[in-house]
Length: 366
Image (cartoon, rainbow, N blue to C red; front, side, top):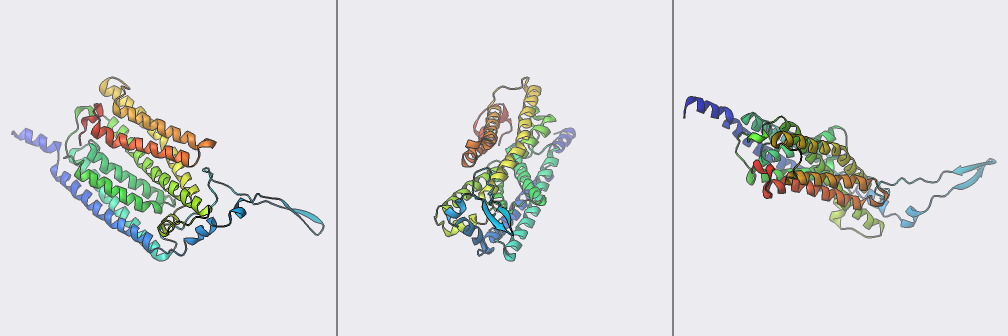
């Protein structure tokens, strides 16, 4: 090999930075594991005595809760006074009014301490993983999403970033931490075992500034859709739990301990809807950007390639969910099922199409 060729190879892939990236990703997994156990401790050691307050509200006599509002007329000092009827504001899902749970910490100082430790570890793991993603990018001097391995580590980083951003904005989403840590560990475990690809240069079709625009927005959309899907799934469990209590049933100890700490089903439903609605325009832009890139790379905007087809199916599914969620007859559980189907379409587009289906988007390899 000539000196020029050796220099070109060294410039193409910096193995030292690639190895640093791998070490950082494994280090992030270790810290995420510690965060996972801290979130578990938050749920286990948080006080269980305070979570009964929501259950008490739900188990109030059904007749009292369903009593129609009335106007009472009384006289005082010769003046007729009309007492306002009690106004009950129901959620968009049609759920009963119940207070939000105290959170995973159970409302006490010990549980809150474990929760704060868990969030701190999550922040540390996020920074380490972000360093791993940036080192991977620097090793080949390009965007760090040229194959499924890089897409996975970037996706999990962005998902955690969305969670931490919501926390920084003062949103009550710490209940999401345990589910997030679990799925991020699974995602990274899949990345470093099944999907790992050595650091290398891109194929010619990917050499475009649209790589930074189209793929980055797809990753952001997927991360936000994931957060919305977790909220939707928990809404379904919490709604069933509230229905059981309202009908006089008695859920098990585990269900009471876990579900009673979550926000009310109405709050979870509203959270999932707002998250999905907020990111849907960006997903629309992602598809449009992909079509523009396709015309530049392949000479046509749309060719019903499997990736294009499933991106459109995902768009239709989320559009159906948003329409159903704003339509009187399809609120609540029916709309939630559509949301989960839509996220399932996104997951298949993310994993299934890339791994199992042949098409123009199968160039990245795994």
